[in-house]
Image (cartoon, rainbow, N blue to C red; front, top):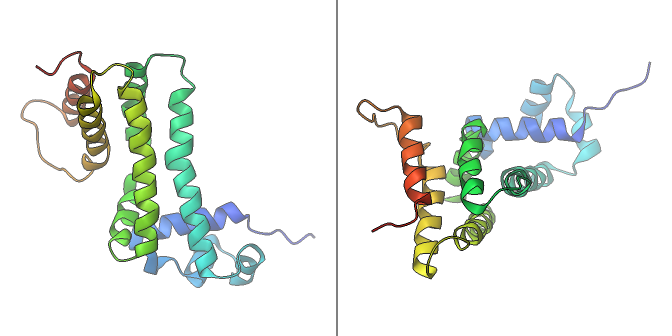
Length: 184
């Protein structure tokens, strides 16, 4: 019977789950091997050490949460307003637990902070490119881009009730305002 190796992606997925559950300290080779039901020897087939796994984990997260999201939205042959709406439609299906854990980690680790800054800048640049297609002036583009990004990230921190409206209704109202013709 052939020896089956645990795929590289399985180690990365397990590391992402671990960082979401317990921060970077939870990403331990022995614990990951146990969660995958394998010995830790297979880890070294794919990665030289824990740091190599952490770096590749961050690379994979960035690709999934920036490149893949942008590609999914841009593949829709619609205008910029509809693309922003589609981004917000996709957001509830995203698992932001990893993002929140990485943001917390970035406060204590300069390299992770730099990577998160790059992710934020890439996302903001893309939002600016969308809003610039239908907003007047640099200030309007910047304000709407910042508000959209803050709404996407910040809504996972807010647990307030919204009167007789559901959270999804209020988020849609906020998106509608972001996409409106005028803010006057």
